[in-house]
Length: 553
Image 1 (tube, helix red, strand yellow):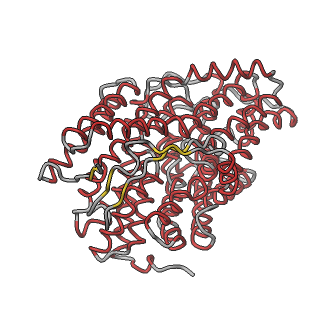
Image 2 (cartoon, one colour; image 1 turned 120 degrees about the horizontal axis):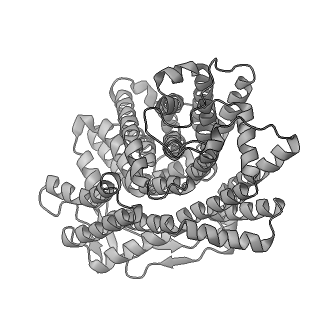
Image 3 (spheres, one colour; image 1 turned 135 degrees about the horizontal axis):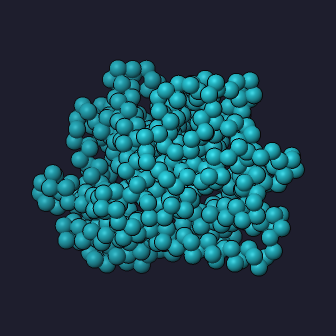
């Protein structure tokens, strides 16, 4: 029998919402305040999600269990597959000494840690977000920053903060394209609306990033470089999203921003070089001494060899992100496994959707087209060019699997939690609570997107989850559906830094295992503050500056 979701099982929306929030609260409290290991906190959250879904929301136990299994499989591929292979590449470059040369070459552009952050965490990270998404930018930039000598909390937290504004156009525009396709939005109108919201924050985030790292005074010392970085990215993001479409927004904006910053640093440098690698006003002892030493000057050939694995990675990731390449690989091998007893056995109903809609539950084993496969091939090619023999590559790979085993388990459990909340309707109950806010809906509707990404770890998933609800609520309140659809994606990007899988990716990339709670506590304020600013901006668009809603031709 088909089971229909119930969004107010307690007969009282407040009590139903409170029950729906319990699994997330259990996980966040366990991780952030009780200092539990990430896999234990995630496991408890998943257990409570199943209990609430079954005992309160009436979901059959079999459906809840199979939802968790589907989520766990998704956690392994594509998310865990990316983490495993990027750490494999990083360890290869570290073992043969080429990563140290890469560090020195970056320091050769600028020894100032604030400027290194702009170049690596913001601009370089945005490129990987645009090309691949799904945890790749945080994994890459956090690994590079820890290698440059940044403290683990700084490398993890700042990579997460930087990976915000580009997320809506990540993986070649996947979140925007998916929302338009699933919920019937006009693709260019939606892309353009997001492109009239996020550029303001693309301009703001570099300032915010340096303020979070070094404080207001240190931020003001390099404001010209921050201005060049943020403005070049924001203007490119606005133009491409409004006139070209969502696919290459991040890739073009990131390349423009990197080039502008590097060229600017050839004619400008700060009066005072900032060499500290720890967060200002944070007690941190785990700082790499290597990162504090003056960089060694290397020959051009040595620098090229050091950058070679990462250039190969960039090329492979970009190629694997192209829709035509994904379609080609999926045509060769991408078996689909409908989850028997779950596929089309759950029905989403009003007011979440206009008409009853069955929830598909198909696991696609797209191993060839997965971004992680491109990263693995890049690591193998790079390893062979670094003179590793095949036996050493294999042994190093198995060592990497052992090193990240608990992180992979955590990702599996967290994706299981997110999938259970989705199929049981818990997340929809939370979303409907935001939808009752009336005139304040532009603000709280934006926070709905933030909540969706915080729960699912994906702006794409949040858009699928709440995109239809945003459209229905906007029509009922006389608001622009495109505005609220865009707000869901724009607000969602600020939830990316606190979603559990991103935090685990960051802790794994920096090899700061067991400190996920420290990272969460650090980034949480930044996440909610930036999300509220997006909500205020969307509210101004809705009521004060309605001309921003016009389609640009």
